[in-house]
Length: 233
Image 1 (cartoon, rainbow, N blue to C red):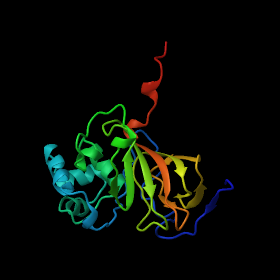
Image 2 (tube, rainbow, N blue to C red):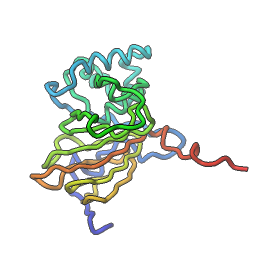
Image 3 (cartoon, rainbow, N blue to C red):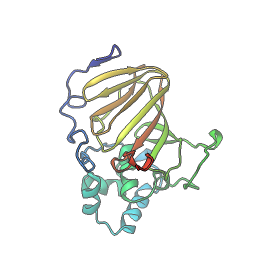
């Protein structure tokens, strides 16, 4: 264990019993845990519920179908569509992939589509689950790249568990990453790369200063590197 890591006390939020999905192994994606958050609707993007419903219906999916594919419960999806809950970013990423769209489109951002260059002055922030995000890549690429700011203090709600991989690069502040029950303190320039099926919590380690980092998330079906390798002879 590294000098910047230590094992966190076991708790319902961060203990080793949190993951309901085994670390990804085998030929297919790990089934996502039915782990949902309950943020109030007052900060949800206007019209998000209707866009989620229309995206689901456009693919001929019932709520039960969408729940089976995404790993989110029928009740939770229904609350999202009725704007009685605000989804976390992992939930939005999952639903965007299920509905073959992008987080930006679901959030109703104007001009969401293919982008090769994103200028700093054109990057509009959006909020989800108390965090602030800026897109750092095209929303329609397989990897979702974001610049993230997490407010000071301890996180509320359960640990995150979802399919895929995450890569983090701290740019400012101090990040407290609790990964599978072990706490890692990351300073600017430090990097983390882990299986998202492991229970994880990301917080600012400072009670007064936010932490900022770059985050890249890849879905299980998109993380194989075989397509990038030269053909064998």
